[in-house]
Length: 164
Image (tube, rainbow, N blue to C red; front, top):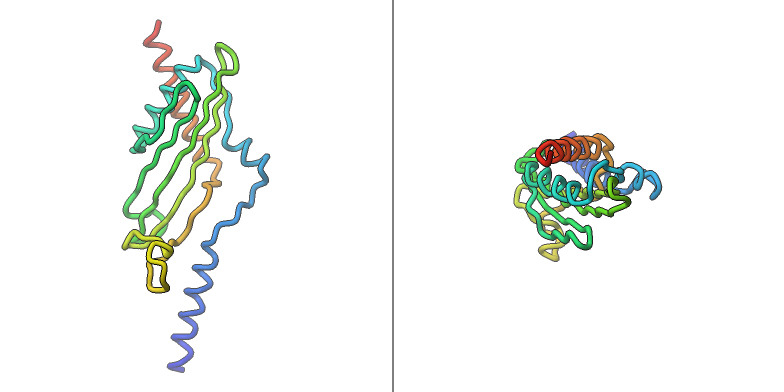
């Protein structure tokens, strides 16, 4: 009986870690639909509104190229809301395209990396004693994208009202 408990715990731990490996359940087209949105308003207002919303959500802007329509930003949350003692790191990659004078096409991809309490990935140490990365991959919850776009649209509305 004493041998069964450690073996069972090890099996549960291995199954839970293997279950954390990310594979996308979405097709590329489904991802594109979830991540993309046409925003009503000028390209400049859309670009600035996205920057404002990212900053409101505690993202740090790493790349902001208005001429190329590219934004990259990162944020961390400690502790993780899903994994006690872990850190969640998010990276947002956003492209903004002027479609017409009143429509901006936007696509945001949000990636997540969840680290253990030490905050290091397994590969950081190159050995089997390293701290494992618990999960990484694309955020596939449509509500995350819907909420982000709702905030951007509110900010665009505010900007439009101020410009009158």
